[in-house]
Image 1 (cartoon, helix red, strand yellow):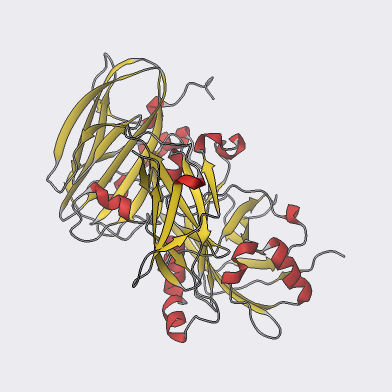
Image 2: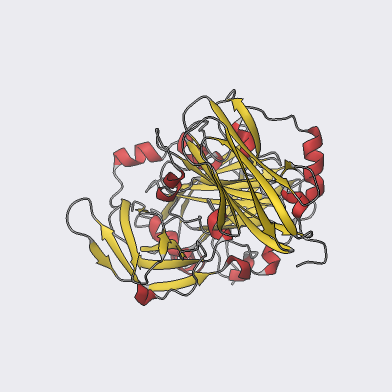
Length: 493
């Protein structure tokens, strides 16, 4: 007997999503998509807290050989002694071993949250049993192996259930503003619903259809209830253009009763919804937020296609120069040969790059150059899709570049406030701290082939900001470092 698909078109003012919800029996009905977990963020799935952890040795090189027996995890309650937590499993994640089909230019990639640090570094995924209590929980991870430095987030977040979500909590979390913030910036509370999404290729349509699924392991975070089970979800979709600007915001609601067969399919394959965005061409990026009205829990997923190099060149020719505008630090829309930067919202009076290691990133952005000259801040609107902040924020940039001419390369870094330059996991320039614009140069020998680059940066008090990275290859003049100029030759994998 074929699946029953429940179709319904929701019109909510001028900004609405065409919407159809379905409950799957056949997993192949969902086109395959790629998914990345948030960078260095603790997240909860099926009441397990999954901790993303990076281990480095005394030379700052990643370690990929730790075992579960060498790690000790504690949960630290607000009151009382620390509680040992057993490591349920440990998995090593090597970004260089991704399926090559996920990295083809022009295809749509599915991401969720900030991904730059983990996409650039060998790391571990550790699972422990999560607390049953909603809210933030603090953890501590230690290792018995000497001379190893661990980087991880100190907190994970547990969403509410229908039983413990109070009316006061729902009044705060379940609002049109909260939904739009989650889709166009980031949510009030961390996302706890695990989503996947993909684009459906339907010829002849004047819109783009997305298949969005709440994964089965997250159904416990959805407030399905009643003698006749009922699901109540709000969907928001923020459409971004290739400049990373918000082009449109769409929203819709589903309120549906489920029968026994529907419930059985949900357990096996999750909750599938089809969303449509108007326009002949697929958007550069769409961010979908799902908000459950009975718990206040939210899920977020990005569906994007990298901007090719040729399109980037045309974009630069027509784009006005951004001066004194934090949008010059990058855009939420991915692009080829780009720095990937995890963005942090810092506490007021932050004074060091060390703050980045104690916080969760709120989103990621992309830039081919780090070229923000020393200017007073003239725009206070923040970066669409990333943050409302124009002060007290940090960006942790990661990238790779290919050298065809071996030799001594001179790098110049200037910033207001703190920054650092690392090449191949070795710090060569350090401008940390709160200070007016400062400049420093360093020379390093580079062999032919791939090299990694890491530039953490933070902006503190008003009113000036700056971040410019320049390079002088052997026998050439100094110029702004553009990763497009250091792409691998066509023959290179």
